[in-house]
Length: 182
Image (cartoon, rainbow, N blue to C red; front, side):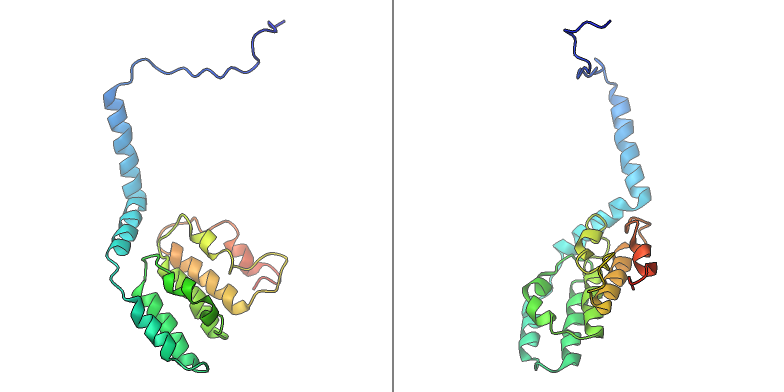
């Protein structure tokens, strides 16, 4: 029988007394090489570059938005496209967040374009791509979302993860083929 004064699970961690600096250097270089070969380093550097060198002027979009008539859907869509192109890959969605009420006036394919524009803005943002698009994606069991928003969200996910391997989530294909999901 075991001694009752001894804990059943020990929390002691054995640390080697001597760690070879060459092994540490090798491990660091191996990690960097894996990041470069997998494309993660390139993606991070690209996102950082595009964000830091973004010189787009939000005043242009705000002025355009104010000059548009309420019923002119062509100009409404053009402003949404201009925003997506001006901020492509920068993850800057300030204009969209500040004008949600104005964006909600979009109808049919403009809804698709608005949601897909998020994919253009967040292209390559692999860590949070799925969570950014979650409110717009088709939900299992609920058929209340607009098919234009849901289709645009799936298209946006494709844009975010394009040419970057998998990682878009395990059920992105299921939402397309599920009954009532699209």
